[in-house]
Length: 468
Image (tube, rainbow, N blue to C red; front, side, top):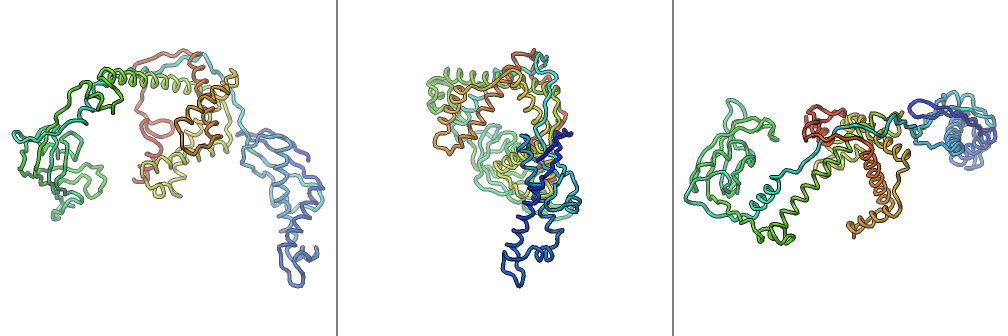
């Protein structure tokens, strides 16, 4: 079979394929035989219909169309195999199918044009000796005390209070009932879900509707009081959003927190016997926060280098590659929404999925280019994962995942990919100049190129857009 290749834009290969007369005739005969076996024609047994009767009954145009369709499919697959083309997909017939059918003659050669997507050629204008800035994250010296204080609060003993009014930090037990006016001129009605008895409420900021906690301050056990509040404009229940309301509150009990002493016994209880002394706990917390800060600093370095590397990569991406990455991202978003307990059937439908795909496309292109660029660095510097380190890491993970059903091929592939990326990033860091700047220096409050704010995920974005 004669095949002529042509390089096309968007990482496509054009193919002109000449089907041999032998294959043309063989395919024609097989298609006729298939029709003979499948059709019921009065007066003839199935499979015994004469050729001319079959052609007259079905029509030569329909038969030729079936033959050409099979020839194109067979010849295209054979051409890709013959020419050893690394085809990704997106097979497109460039010739007019109707013209091919109209010109087809059994036993005559058939020539047609098609195209396929192939992996793109990647060019890195520069891949080392970068000079970039990255934010240095330093551990917060007050974080250890903050965590320990949080543990103290969790382990606090509640002591009844009778000799003073309620104040911030107390724990109250209340009965309450709310009423609001749905619209101007209408009568007050009960707040849906706005009634409870023996409700335990910690008197801390942000625990309830703004103004509710403040209204309890100064009350004494046994006292009943009416307070006025306003529901937030973004309150989930639309009928209450932004509406003023009144709550009748009865303070039934008031309790204060007696915090435990920060000593060795406290350390053992708070850690579930993981630490014997408070010194051990502090040391472990300090190490954890130091490690987290170091890891975040390294992540910032990697991100700065990846962004610079992205500026240096040239690759004409095929549509197949982009579509696959977009599909992957949409699937990940669906899984994330599902894990959040959100009904994905409501959010992801025929209207929202195209929107999400369109929003994901720029990010998908960026992700592909990053991956291709990292692959080029590995190729140029002969970076690879050794078999022994791969097996060691896999064994570590198998120990952690003991008892679970593991797809070993997928696990091996994922581990090798992660280890190789780690090697590449370590090499880039070692071969670049990175200026560390204070945390917060480089952050911007502008939307990213993908259309999301810095702290907005795709899942959150699609959820918000659908709700609106």
